[in-house]
Amino acid sequence: MNRLRRFFLAPAAALLAVTLAAPLAIVCAYSLMTRGAYGGVERPFTFENYTRFWDPLYGAIVWRSCWIAAAATVLCLVLAFPLALFIARSGARKNLYLSLVILPFWTSFLIRTYAWMFLLRDTGLINTLLQELGAIHDPLPLLYNNGAVILGLVYGFLPFMVLPLYATLERMDPSLAEASADLGARPFQTLWRVTLPLCAPGLRAGSILVFVPCLGTYLTSDLLGGSKTILIGNLVQNQFTSARDWPFGAAASLVLMAVAMGLLLAARRQGEQML
Amino acid sequence: MRRGGLAVYAVGVYAFLHVPLLILAVFSFNASKFTVWQGFSLHWYAALAQDRDLIEAAGNSLIIAIVATALATVCGTLAAYALWKRASGWISGGLYLSLVTPEIVTGVSLLAFFQWAFRFLNLRLGMHTVILAHVGFSLAYVVVVVLARLRSFDRGLEEAAMDLGATEFTAFRTVTVPYLAPAIAAAAMLAFTVSIDDYVITSLVAGVDSQTLPMAIYALARRGVSPMLNAVSTVIVAGLGALVLVSERLRAR
Image (tube, rainbow over all chains, first blue to last red; front, side):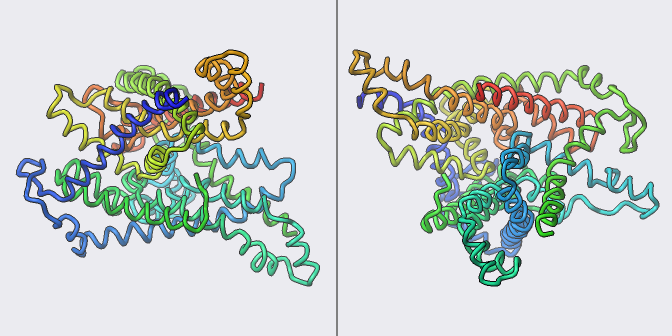
């Protein structure tokens, strides 16, 4: 029994060792080393790569990543809550409505991001339409700014917010809302003071499922933010490619990872089982 | 009244989710190069069929996705079964970590690791590194999906098979695997879609000879919007959509 189990577990263990443990160990080691003359890593060991985050230049990048991820999360919440409520109350058509939310999951993230480039750029559909209609003369600068990045993130991660909210709303006892109405609460009061507080676990789970990937995003900010919206993910990528400062890039990756893990562990401690 | 308000809101959110892709697809049939509708044409699809780089990239993507999916599905299914027999904190922790690590971090750490390892081995970045990376990040998805199905599996069935003389492995092969088949298929689907779609990790660990379709699309998108890009996007979305439909049909049977 145990032999078979060990034999079955071995390939996955080996894969995790080679594609996860060893790479992370290397990154940890590199983050404490000095950048080499030709882009490699050298001794001496140093903490300097971490202390560089106190530099206002990099502090600004961390701050921007946080507020953009937070804004995307709040917008997702605003869009997702009524939708989840709608799905949970739609009876027999529930599954259809739910699969319409999940459907974009199965289409390429890159293509969904490109779709917004197609709509938003200077010669894109929205600007062309507005110009045809004579509403504007010069194209509006819709692409390559923080707003476009937030929009792309909301578009990409909305399903992550809808699903946990729907799951909690679905499990909720409808008699609670009825009781509230019987006791004289107006529909909005019931929503605000009964339904929403009971949704807290779903709200928390959804917010973390959206916030964490938004914080570490690279593709969305790269394509929709252009060179103006540098986030932590772009900083990491840049250090490992064109800037060739691997130790600093490694430190930035670990800072990003620590924040993501910290949030997820905090949520788990509160009893959320997301996996 | 409130129900109506909610419905209007829901229609709005669904439009937000789906209309951009529909518009993208519609304009892939536009005769004009510009974003003004000038009549139906298959011109951009013809251009697509002529584009050697894109076709080669699509071929690479398919090879990588098929090989990576096969490996990840086998390793992940075996691991899920082993974990179901008895939990392992290390393996579960590792799988969880691989699911929550931001893609860009996975990418750069694999790059750093490969470059370090290649100092001792006579190898370079290429298809093999991309495949290894893809197996690595899709493994956890497979385990999660298969493990979910195992939770509803009755241990007694395997024991009955063994009481009737089957070895442990025969019981696994002839009783457990058939029960798991729908979950294994779903897991493979998931692994395939995350593999064929990945840009961030792939672009970091790919070599000169292993450009994938997302990398080609990314390069085109950076250069500007071209209707050919709309055409290739439409083909991919339709292809993945067909795959999902077929697998749903198979599962429903």
